[in-house]
Structures are given as structure tokens and as C-alpha cells.
Image (cartoon, rainbow, N blue to C red; front, top):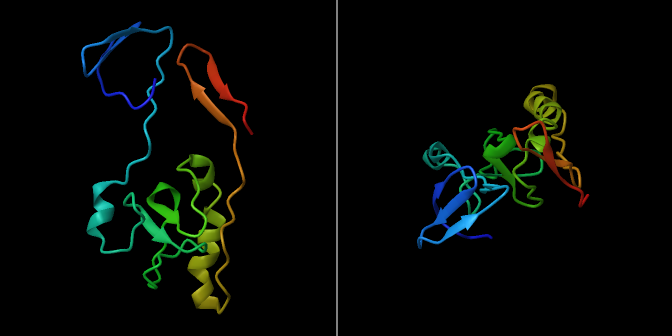
Length: 133
């Protein structure tokens, strides 16, 4: 079941906004990433969801020497899902690009990998695995 507003969850039951009760062996509460409100206060360009708009170099599209990494930024020309796997790969690119103006080097792009392993911890010693790699 998707796109359903839930008002109550217990061990084996969830209640939808309309009062319908659903029995479940496993409830996966999956929400999308939401930009923190502070990003809207920075006067920087954002994507349609409110994340800071960046070039492939992780530099903001505003043209200023401001960078955004991890879930705070979205590369406009090649947006990647909001997943930690990308955030942990960005530091070497960010470090280079922060130093590049001082050393006269060119900024280099971050190239996100095509896909990644998706595991969801079920808190009981097990996990769900998405095998669509």
C-alpha cells in the first residue's frame, strides 16, 4: 500500500486516515528525504524539493564559492537519490575543490555510482534486501 496517510501503528496493525485497519506482518514506513527548513533561509538556489542546487563539482549554482554535499545538495545535471552512499564518497572531491582555487587547479566533478546495495534493518537481527542492482 502506498500514498496512504497513517494515523496509528501497533505491533501488527496500522490505521489509515479514513479509519480502515490493516493487519500486517511487517510494516515498512518509507518516506522521502525532506530538505531541512534552514536551507530555504540561505538565499541559495534550490531544486524543486528545496535542496541546494549544485553543479557536478558540488559548488552551488549561484556562482559563489559555496559547496553543498550529502543530502543538503542536489546536482542539477545528474541528480542522485538521497542516500548516504553518495555522501560518504563526496569528501575527496569536496576537499580537492575547496583547495583548487588556492592552488590554481581546476574543480573536478563528482560522478555518482550507478546503483547501490539497499538494506533495511528490521531490528530483529534480520534485514530486507533490494536485489534490483
